[in-house]
Length: 110
Length: 120
Image (cartoon, rainbow over all chains, first blue to last red):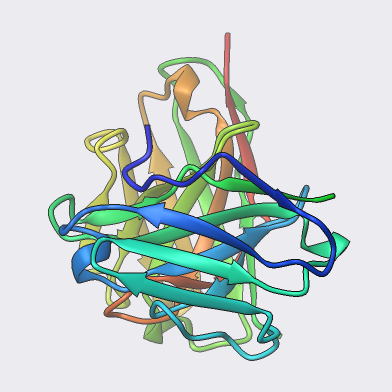
């Protein structure tokens, strides 16, 4: 059971918009920065969003992040078949003194 | 090119030990904090351990505390994970990961991973 809660799966049609939620608590999301990672099949994770809302260079602005209280959300617009992947939220947990991830959300582009 | 290359993964019996290594290149290793993150077959990401850039501060997941030890050799640009008393549930792909920001401890560079299988 993961400390952060994500929906197991989401789906949408090409060109549409999808959001993925990540729920935590005051000891993690509530008081720390959230990051999001994309893991394409058979590859290592890749940083998509850091510091709640910021995109590393090279990440298209179709990807966005937001945070409110103890929850965070990843948004993806203009869905492409190449976006099919597992998406993970992550942060630091101050009570555990450790990193925590969500269980992952599998995105299907129908 | 910034790169992390893990090695040392293998098949080991329950109760056995293994030492994973991660060779860093393309950046000033001593300036960066590091993590080990693992992923069991078909499962999600699990944070394992963190080490500060000097090596003076370390943290561990409860699931490995007392059994695993993270360390680094900045002169050799290398990160290590000593794994003792291995259990079947430690079977996973182990990723070496570079911390991007001290306050967030998120990861901006991942290795390709090294596979550890614990089985008799």
